[in-house]
Length: 129
Image (cartoon, rainbow, N blue to C red; front, side, top):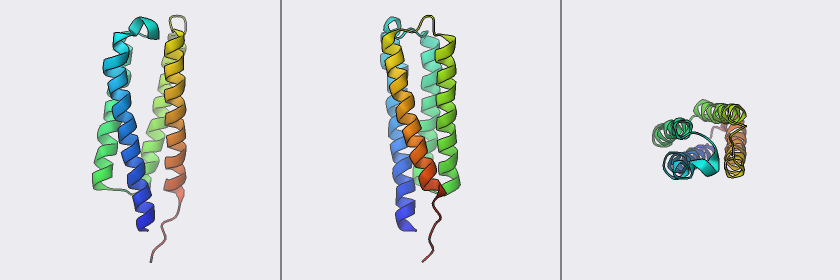
């Protein structure tokens, strides 16, 4: 049981760190290179706001509760973020630059891999001692 809770906490920590990196990149770094990305700054700020919300939520869950249903919720929210990002990329496909495509393909890939792992761990039954 403790090992499973530690896995949950580790995934919340990893999710929070990833959200922090995304918040900084989307909200600070990428707007400086907006022309190389091809997305308007306000869109980058919206995505940064989403990442910041995930940062707060995963940080809170790391310190407060490591229950499996919360981890499933985090995984589902991460997948929703990826779908939202793909929708934005589709909407701005005519102005999107290669650097922007490379960044978002990488981000989406990493977030989906993390979500898959979160879902797998959350589905494991807790063994009572």
